Amino acid sequence: MSKAPKRNLVVKAHGTSRNKYLTLIPILALLIKVVITLNIKQPDGSIVGGWLGADGESYLKGVNGLILQGYFSNEGVLSYWPAGYPILIWILCKISVLYVILLLSIFQSIFYCLACLFFVRSLTNSILQPYLIPIALVLSFNPTLSLSSLVVGYESPVASCILFLVSIILVNIEMKNQQKLRGHVFFFGSIAALATFMQPRYFLTVIVLVIAWAITYDKRRVQIYVLTLTLSITLIAPAILIQRNAISIDKAVISTNLGVTMRLGAGESTTGSYRHTGPEVPCNRPNASQVNTDGELVKCVIQWYFSNPEKAMRLFINKIWYFWSPWSGPFSNGTMARNPWLKVNPLVEIASNSQKGNDLVYKLVGKSISVLWVLANLFLLMIGLHYLHSSKGILRRLAYLSAIPVVTSLLVSAITIGDHRFRVPTMPLSLFLQVMGLIFIRQVWKQFRDKPQLGKLT
Image (cartoon, rainbow, N blue to C red; front, side, top):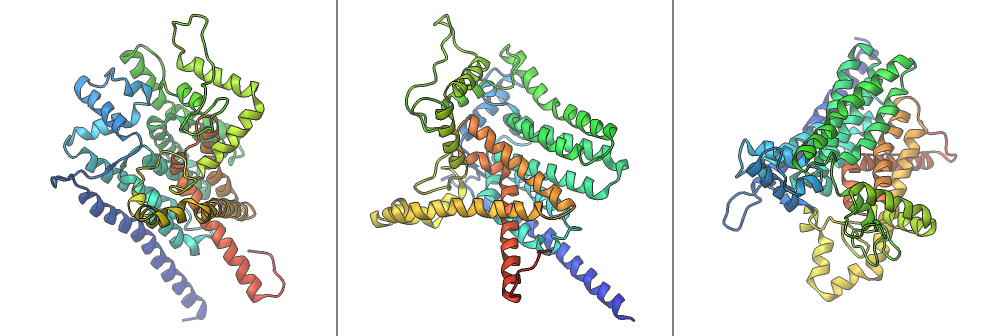
């Protein structure tokens, strides 16, 4: 046997071994989470199966309304917040009401496992193949992101949906097979509809991703096909929510909290976080006895931003900082107090054990570390984005596809409220970009170490 066939066999065997690990890593994380969820119990020993998120009680209140009154329940929570996520929990109640949180945790964990598998598999034919194992490890075992699938909240399933959407586009671009385009479009539209059903504000992310996908095709006819069919399928989700509210509360709206949320993050002396301070943005109607509709509040806040550009810019900067703020510590700002990772985070334990530990975490040392942590994360993300963008072919596409959900989530946070919880749904992509940043730095260091003159990266 010649050397070439032997070398090909070694490469093939190595690739097969890597693919096996790529499958085992997310599955191992899934099994660990199943064990964890079976050990989340009430004081009396009964299995709960998960934790409540920031809005957990509200979601469960909506589910109770659906159980008692049916699909068109007029429970206020179901119209104030989008009803999609409670409806999905209500469907699981058809299997078991008693163990619905356990079922939710398991389903969300399986969904996230499949999303991670699909994402790393979509990159197996790229030049990133040697780095897929560390990517899979980070996505599967990041404490906050992974444990979020055991929380009653839309963040984890939406994160899974976004991973699926990016993966579908990558697979379609790589295959370059228009015969399978219809299947990819229906798959993308269905996942996008699910994401917007749970949290409609991600429709903006879907629109930009679909545009980025459509322009990969040269033919205008194909571009229009991808745009129209994908968005048509996606729009089914908000249409369902509008139809439900039109019957249940006689208002053809998706939800009624957007204006309230935007008003919470705006004002003369507030900081832009969910902890509003100072006077509210004045949105008075001519008739003082009438209450502003949600649409009127949205319009009012937007007008205030345009009328107060300097204050608006200050608030936008604050909200961007809050979006990237740490989960705990002196600069933590958001609604992630129930982050499961904080239950075992050593910094939380240090701060709570003694005054000395509290001073260490919340004063100069802790503040310095928090600032460096945020800047390091942003630096790695930007370096990773630069690395992918400077590459050719599918990696350059991947740079845009990874950045789009992160940037759109950041923009939505900037016009509503600053909350680090809003970055959880896009964490898989921001973590991926940060891993790419580490890989780029490693390559630079390796070339610097091996050669006196730094050559061009391949």
